[in-house]
Image (cartoon, rainbow, N blue to C red; front, side):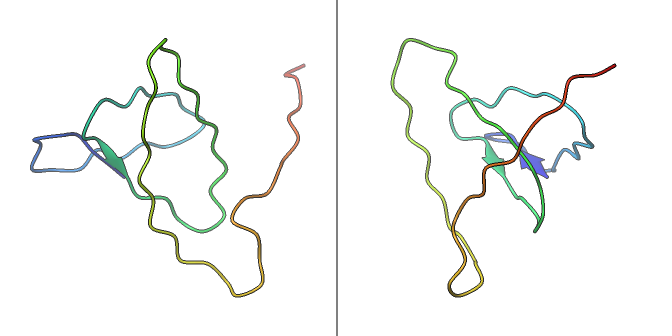
Length: 69
């Protein structure tokens, strides 16, 4: 779910999909969600995250990609 800054309702994003986030936007991610993020500007960004994880597991896992046929 995505909550845009100043919005009172959430947006549902079903993958595979691409979206752009702006200042103040927030994202709720569910377990098992695979995602990629990139700063496509020439300005630094700050990401604030609260994470609930399984004890002993890493905060991120590298996954491979495959090209479409």
